[in-house]
Length: 527
RNA sequence: GUGUCCAUAGCUCAGCUGGAUAGAGCAACAAGUUGCGGUCUUGUAGGUCGGGGGUUCAAAUCCCUCUGGGCAUACCA
Image: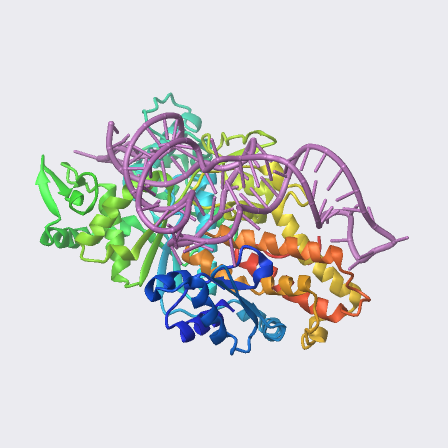
């Protein structure tokens, strides 16, 4: 609908204009302040300009009214236009709020080190990325999801050491001395025992760190994939850091040819300060081993070689200082770094009944994603993560998400959906019975609810373009609230408007169902 | 120290590229159901938008500055 209005505005004004929702719903469905900006160009009062424009718009038959108020133009659609769209939505549920765009996007998220299970911070980025993916696909982007596996370098080496030491202490019953850095969680001991039972304890006797690292990493990756699957996330692609290194020399040569590299203190430095980084960064140490940044440079070259129109990375907010150097590297490689967008996912503080959520000893004093999923379920976890901006701190109490009343938004929304389902059952009617009912002579409440329910497309576009998924969760809460309020003040079954209201409710239910689906949550028919 | 993000109602947060009297949920207080799931609804109260300057017809929104926080500041990933 806003697209239709956009077209009409362009037609009469000759350019795209801002379209807003009026603060006061009674003013109309949409509004534009365009007369204010035209006032400067035309040197006329905005009110006069708005009045002149109003007369042009009145010729369009989709408008019930076009009003001018303090220079704002307010538009109200006719009920028959809304009805036509409602019928289309019910007949084309799968296409509701869909759109088509000629743009390919590579979305990278999670990319947690395969050295342990996912914790709650990872979960937030994972859920956010997955929802962005689903929404983006729905509105027509060609998006692929990707997980970058850091399976090279020191962390993996540490994993191997940790497994070996755990095995020596707990299986071979030797005295061991632990170094300063190693993975401390009890899962490491379990991992060692599992490896012992699948092979033999001899595997720990010749200190084959490389083998243990490899086995451990593979097992952790399986665990991570399972953690993700438990909240409905499946990646299109996994890409291994290690596998990329065979191209390092080619990439290094490319960087050198582009004047990005210099040698100092026997190390190779990337001159990233030239492109906005605060200082230059080492890419190859004096022992000839490339740094972590080198892997990311190869990876981003690999990404850009695959020629997407846009690259979105979701990173933990603690990595924000890393953005400048990667962008600089992308420029040195000769690509447009504006195509690379980094979205940050902030840390999460969890409470349970007002107290800090207990850490998992098993995982080494992290809040384990799996524990929270088992506690409150995937749907509740997804919803709470998606109801706040990704780059702000989030604090919530899991007990609040178990409540079965209006204080729990996911319950509240599902309740609206289930209630509509139950009303249809009670009335003994199906969607097909009311789909062609003509919506005429509806009261204002009903028209408002219908209009709101038809806003899904606009909300999805807005949520995706701004990378703010909470716009969708907020919208669904608001629709559920509007519905409950309407239902409370209007008798439906047995009233003369029964069929019309059923059609209206069917649209509301469709909006909720499609909206929740894009958040990775299945709407409940019964509760 | 430097960089960066943030500061809006008691709490958790919205507020779109500056635009119409600053919003929602929760908590608090007060009402409503002989009517379809009360797993609900309605109302009241609550804010000098951290302080101070500036730009503008218009600033919570943009700029400067101060204060108070988070994060980063590795040749670890």
